[in-house]
Amino acid sequence: MKKIWLIIFVLLLNGLTFAKQTTKHAKHKAPVLNPQVELQKLIDGNKRFATHHLKHPDESVARRIQLARKGQHPFAIILSCSDSRLPPEIIFDEGLGDLFVVRIAGNIADDAVIASIEYAAEHLGASLLMVLGHEKCGAVNAAIANQREGHISALVDAIHSAVEDVQASQGKKQADDSPQFHEQVAKANVKTVIGRLRASEPILAHLIAEKKLMVVGGYYHLASGKVSLLHD
Image 1 (cartoon, one colour):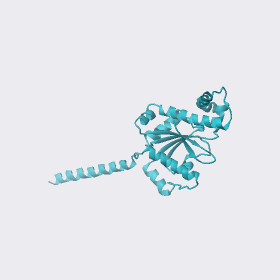
Image 2 (tube, rainbow, N blue to C red):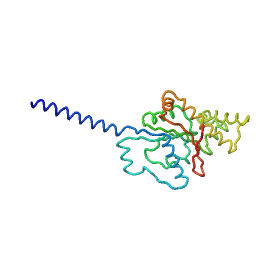
Image 3 (cartoon, one colour):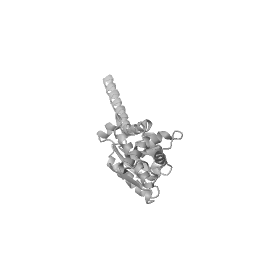
Image 4 (cartoon, rainbow, N blue to C red):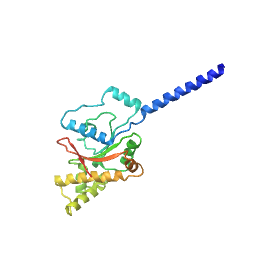
């Protein structure tokens, strides 16, 4: 009889241990996010930044400890230019663990950038991806001027199709250096990058088709601090 009770006790103990482990893993699982809600969070945060009503969320010691213990689950991915004037966490008034930021001059999408985005979307559960271009972008200037010194040619090659698209839409044979032309190329480049990301197999295209990831474009205005959404 004692052996039977011992077996029952062991089985109950194992069951409780399994339940605790399951609960522990559940706590670390990425939350299910709504991309429309997350986009509105970015819009609201940028409005606070532009009007200087910042909240500085998720910057506490408790937040640091939480992220260290439970891991990161950013709600959005931002692919932005490396320009020092537009750090995403600041211009969207977000904090630690909120945004997965990939920064590269000209906000282009090479294989390493796409791999970083895939990781955030597939493994961390981010449901929103914003490609963020901006006013007076140096990489866009280089592409318009067709500058080729050093490794900058890699950026120029990536952005050149946007230059050609704007030229073709305006019936021009050559690019010009006007602010209007620059802005049109910067926005065209954002849309070109979005197109590449949406077509990226096998991960991003799959997530987008299943509506687990939404991709949007943005354009940052340096003086006002505002991000305007770019529509397809």
